[in-house]
Every structure is written in structure tokens, then in C-alpha cells.
Image (cartoon, rainbow, N blue to C red; front, top):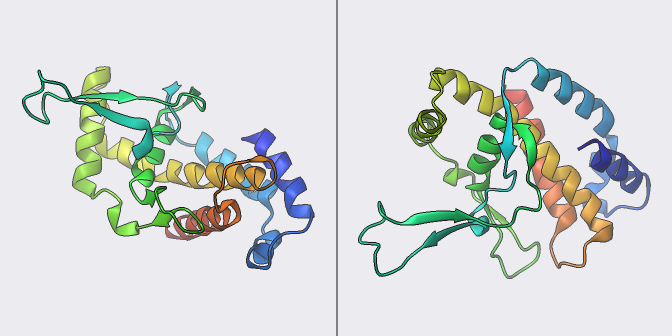
Length: 193
């Protein structure tokens, strides 16, 4: 994230679209340092993470032997962002991705639907299954709180990614709009927490 921070700061120091100029007032470095300090206060273990568990990277294998959704097998693809990371980041990022649709055909090529964010019950069910699978006796409510804090990191991470990609990516996507969306979501969540 620190490498993307430096590139984002350089990108912000140049010309940016009018819709983004208000974000130039935000000190990305100050936010990064605050976020880093805040995340270190959590007790999230470092595990191997996918870091991009969004709908396009989770496939359901269907074949003649599958008789119900309960029997279907899920397969993760697209491992370019995999690394060791905080467990809560991966879970938080997955939950946030429920709200983003990247199949939009029109600019900015994504759609945000906050109502799609999983309910408390859905998040707790996911966390309980995760903890059971890993053999952890942790309190799911503690992990849920930890995940809420790490949602800030997900927003910040993808905002930086998007700023960096405004200059370097050949893929048609509303990178500036996405950066604005993720930084606005970051600021809104930071205010609520």
C-alpha cells in the first residue's frame, strides 16, 4: 500500500479532473499513517489472503454430479493481489465487494449499491463458518468489529489502486470516479466508527 501511496501522491500533485480536485485537499499520507496506527490496535492475525474476493473472482463449478447449491463447489480465481495480510482485511473487502458491480457497460463502468452490503446476520454467519473452518474459538462478534475497522483499509487500498491506475492502466474504467467513490466511502465510514 505504501508504494501505491507514493505513486498516488505524485499523481495528485499533477493535473486532475475537476470532479477530483476537492480530494487534493485530503492528505493521503496523513490518512495512511492514521489508518496504519489504527489497524495496529486491532488483533487481526496475518494470514494468506486473496485480497480481491469480488463476484468476478468467485466461480461456482456446476457439473452433472451437483444436485443442489449445497453440493456446488466454489473456486477462487485471479490471484494477482494475493499476499500475506490481515485476516480482517480480506473479509472486510469481500463484504464491501457485495456493493460494487463491475459489469456496467457505461462510464464509469461500475455501480455502487450500498443496500447490497451483507446484513449483520449474513456477516456473522460468514465469520462463524470461517472461524469453524480454521478451528478458531474466537468470539465472532469480536471478529465482526475487527472487520468493520478493516473496511477502512479496503476503501483506502482500492482508492490508491485506482489513482495509480488513472495513469498506467490500458483497461477502460472510471478510475478517477472509483477513487472518489472509495475515498468518500472511507471518510463516511471513518466518521461513523
